Image (cartoon, rainbow, N blue to C red; front, top):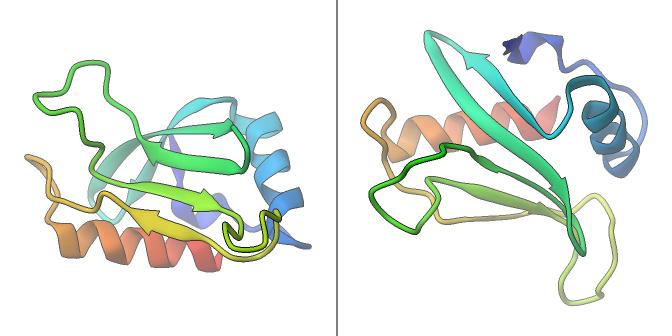
Length: 105
């Protein structure tokens, strides 16, 4: 498990995501306050960070962040946040606060 405080990368976002993948792999958990958030990180067209759970009661993810610009079809410093909704442990607001903290690291 990785504490969110450990995400102290320097440089541009795309390089940091690549470094994070090298350091932690595709599946890892992030500690945020008193919560443990299981995450996946994968490279599709753009890097994607999402909530990971093997079994879910719904097809939707509690969150998915896509790091890139869809309008320009370019990997840059932009991100698109979607599917935000509560889990058994986290409210939608807590998920958004986690995403903001993660994105600013």
